[in-house]
Length: 259
Image 1 (cartoon, rainbow, N blue to C red):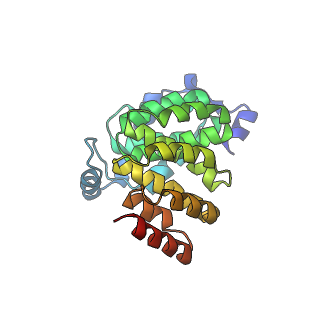
Image 2: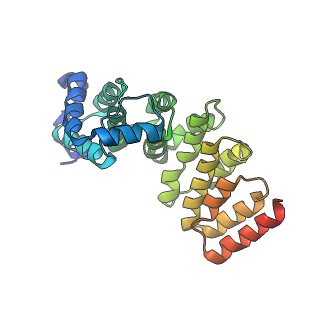
Image 3: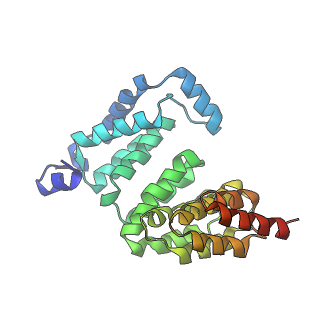
């Protein structure tokens, strides 16, 4: 039974029906034996994070959250409260579980929840948590509720580069779903293309790479128009999935344009 069916049959779990902190603790304890000290050390070092790590893999985190959600058909408020309860402790896997909770509950979320998502992105301070919030949660919300786009437009000009990156990544669900907002990509990327921040440069190229899978002609045209000013990392991502002949043409154009 999925969450929508559960609501229809009156079995939905509301925030008054359970203790979110106890539930978050139970999810944590379900994950704990799935981790290893070695993985915890490696991931903490790789992500350069100040959080505590349990050493649990992403697939195991997802399975744990899925199992928890199957036992409780959470309404919107309950899903948000439980996600925030998971997030409040500085443990990487708890915060990953919070992101997964929101991702799996995103059909119940709307534009009014983008403020919460934004707060979590600001606190995430890293791609491992922020990218899922941006693409799989915020991006999915605005794809279903276009009236939320003005909030994402604000993100594109924010002083926090993780928020600016998130505006770009929020475009990905539309691109992958065959509903690309090419105008917004143009608007966002044009204002960020000269930035020196690696994660911004990478995100522009990432979105271009996804666009190129469905509309290589558009990606070739846009990349060609900006080939002289885009960074190397943006360019490499942009041409990664293009047909070999088109990618080679762009490489030649870049070689002529960039000393």
